[in-house]
Length: 619
Image (cartoon, rainbow, N blue to C red; front, side):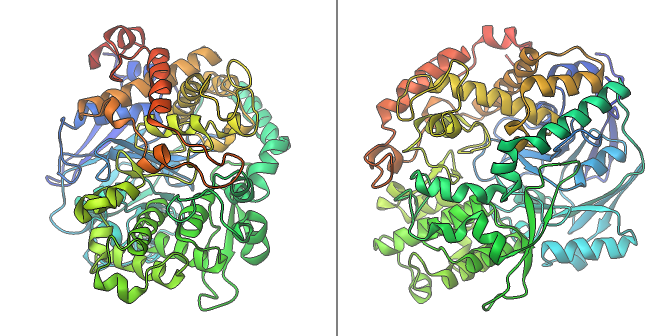
């Protein structure tokens, strides 16, 4: 294999740190790997497949934690994100989680296209990367600190306020299976429990300071193209209406009106007074000023403060749509101050808000139905709408105290432990708690959730726009509740999402930019000649690679499934009232989907398909 920097926009090195031995190795980035898989999700998936043996326990020293950049990272390309990847302790699948801020750019400025951490430190430690200097430092004094405290403490110790820090809170130290990684303060890699993987390695944080720069193959062309795309996003009415005005919380009223807002453990899709959680409501009650991630003209975030009530004075990031859905409506809560403080607690203690809301909503339903009523929950009066109980449970989960120790395992394991009818109300897919886009009013979303590579995830394809808003799909418009054309839309979306993820770009940029736009930027940065079709082909290649990782771990068609509630309980209200995604509906869509993917009937990529995509090494 050619082992040189594959294009000017790559740094040409992968940094590997073994916490067990203390060894630090710099591997060359192979040019053919970069050309085939680009970077980001593609590079991380390749590394994970190669470095983690089949059947490895996610908490074993042999699991690796990967931070990966893309070819556009650290340039002026619009709307960049960061990526961290490992085998998930929540699902046992491939898992990649994305975050904003400036941390991942610092890794590239330090001279690396990816960071791979393996092994386990003897004591709580943090990793300090200062260009070529790499050091494992004692972090025992940071034990128990929340994410903000950790960030401040490390910068103070290093004497460098410009260093970028990714860290875990108490939840990660305790290996709560849905612990997050806080990246560059209030930018979270939330899904899949990768903060727990970090905790299992006795790694409290990674701090980086880079002084290098990133070049591109065609500087003038790249500059003009990037400037044009910034302007497209700024002038896009869709971007402004959907993301820039109110952030992701701008979807609350639409979702609630369409019967898609998860309510009381997904029993319904509409909650009374749901507009109290909307972006408009937040902008009046909570917002201080807008905030953006690296090189992003969308500016979807907002620095916020709780101005009244018992949590007044708390400064936090604005409440995202998913958090309003899961920690809000899914727990029967529409008080924005309570949801804001719950969001703040999760961020500081280090918990994914989606899974936290999913597991607490699940516990609430079990308690109300009399299926699970331990004394601790009796004392909390754990019923839908009880905000104080939610806040107490978040703390108990993060510290694994009392009943929080079991809830920290996630919905799937809680259902297995409680037993009996509990599994009938467990809302998860492959062990990952379902996000705030339930599928009974959007069958294509059901297929996307069932086939997502990290478990139920809305960032692996979002057919709602095609089904509910009428956006034309690859072959034209589709009917909302029909099954026709849904597999084609899901495949298209998954390939496009995966392709953007190889650049480590933001999903929201897809509202204004097309695959052709991304191909133009990638071509100018690398010097390769790539069109929209090839760009989507890259996404398809990466999607098949993550599928092969999961197949290797035992996941097949049997796991491409939906919770019983979505298949057997018709939606009780809203425009899709009376609808569900039955087992026969799902199987019909899966047959169509596997056929389009050229996978076999069990959901396994065929030899022919892998050879067609140039993935023969994974046969």
